[in-house]
Image (cartoon, rainbow, N blue to C red; front, side, top):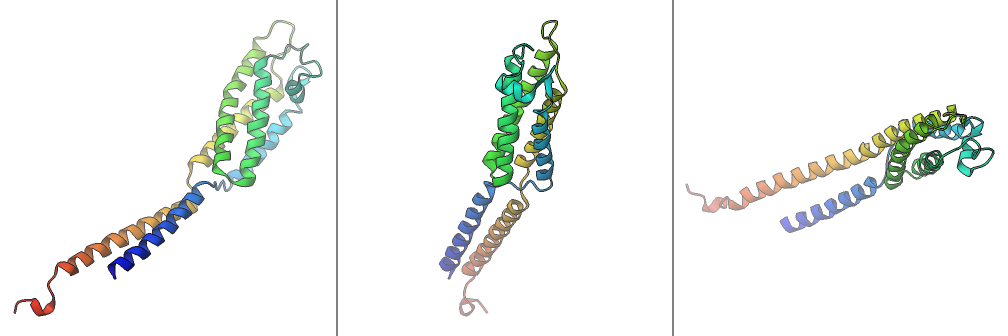
Length: 198
């Protein structure tokens, strides 16, 4: 009977562990999904706004419409591409698929973009005389990517309700098995009634 109970517990434990592994690959952003969606939209709008002078974010991306004349440097282009790929692309993929790995890539890419954004703003502030400084689009994109990084960090590092429930269920099952094993051990060490003295 003990071996049968142990086999049932092991099968139950294997099911719980498989469910935990499956759930661990998913995210549950909850209300943050709306916040991230709004931030992605703001980031997209920032590409329509001027990043420096009359040069818009899309012009920075593709080096068109006077970006050379405005002396748009490499940090601005790198920031624009990182913001587009990670801030928009991977953020949308992570929200649609709810995959933890994609959310982590969005977080890492957005964090790198935040640092490069600082460099892009600084490079526009220290540009040679006669060239425009940072535009509203660049500043909005930089602030948005910083806030997006914060929200992705909260999503990636917070366990979901289902993960917490599965962990609690596993704890209860282990505690039940441990107490049952202890009682069975006591029953086995106790002599039968006919062998008891008196």
